[in-house]
Length: 391
Ligand code: MLT
Figure 1 (tube, protein in one colour):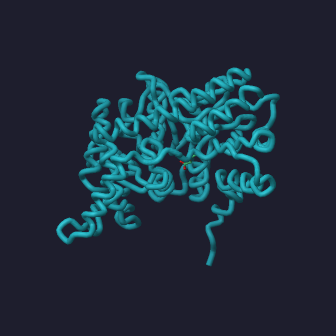
Figure 2: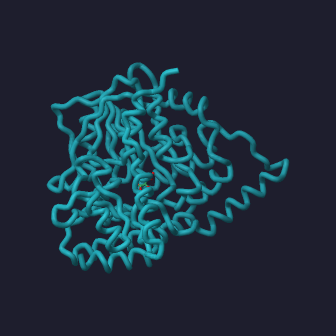
Figure 3: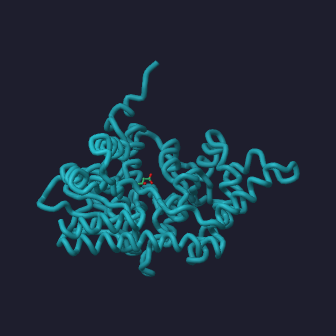
């Protein structure tokens, strides 16, 4: 038996496992000290009552022969796919329910989509970037090239038209930097994809955090994207579903590559390897997209965005440059005194008990930067902000 040697090319630990390991070590050394956790982007607000009530109703249905559900529709239940399509339509974005595939989250879809592409493809990644794009591309044996985000370009790298790529990952609002592409910038990426007959994998998991009405929420707001892009989204951050698990991917039937329909290939892949998101969870997800559901989740989004504002204000007081936090739940700060990311991570942890995520863990261009998640409790954020303001 031979193993997949590409899997051995990865760093020993997934970034967030490495951060968790270091936090455990700190806890073991200083068990009495408080930890202010602003590292992994995991939500802390409980689910809205109307969502959990819907889960209970759906669970009750499962205990009656007349309303019991076994295996669901391969692509996801039509009621949820239609609710998702309607969510796009409200913003005037044309997405057909037939093109929506329900899943257990964006991370899984991002990894699983790799099944559709030949190993012999060049992958273009922004740097820094959500580590899943890099790790899954490497595991699949693909060549990876980068477009570097810098302080000067506001961590919104643009395509270099002299460089060829086949698959392009974009994340906007961005994880980790919180930067958001404008419509004009996304249009240039779409144009670049068309020039290269390339596919864009657009991760929109943080779109619900956009406040500026001019900024795009979806790649499908850009003309031509339905011929060159797949969009991945999830309720993890929009509705606090990190522990519930529900996401979706839009694969337009207009997407044709190499003489094949990516929609049909994805349908085939999902039918073979996935048996669907639980009926109870799909009901809860559909509830999110109702008027009262969207109102309820907006309160949590506003709460997290106020956290981001508090963190940014504290950094500004300390004279520290930061990106993000205005249309995204991540604040990306430059480490003071040219410290490298892991050194500053340790300083924050051991001096103040604050856990962030070292920027270099998201790629070489993140060296010297650190990410704060604004998904903590207000208490945690306020305490951390008081330390940060005095840095
Ligand atoms: C993060 O902290 O970047 C996210 O929580 C990771 C994820 O969504 O998988």
